[in-house]
Amino acid sequence: MEVRVRDTGPDGVVLTPSGELDMSTVGSLEAALTAALNRPDLRECLVDLAEVSFLDSTGLRALIEGFSLARERGRSLRVANPQPAVERVLRITSVGPLLGLPDATTPLPPDARSLG
Image 1 (cartoon, helix red, strand yellow):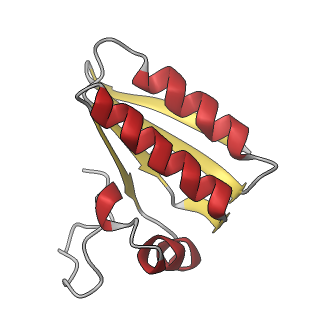
Image 2 (cartoon, rainbow, N blue to C red; image 1 turned 30 degrees about the vertical axis):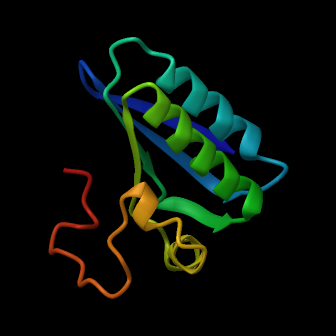
């Protein structure tokens, strides 16, 4: 798994993992999240899931731990653009709203799939 990192300004970063996010690949995402969240100037970390085709419990755990670390440090971490299979995992585990996805019963706003 590759994780691309793109700065969105002086205090933001977008992490874009690609491929399957599972036990054998989760280390790349964990390392990228840790590096991003250790930046002293960071306020927001966005994980763009558009290129993630599969998410298992270890990938879910990495996102939850990243969210917890961000919150401890007064920062935000959210996800965007999940593929349908990944979105389903985030929703059935109730992790989606924690990571910034609207509740499944709430209609998505027109720009919900964009990174803004």
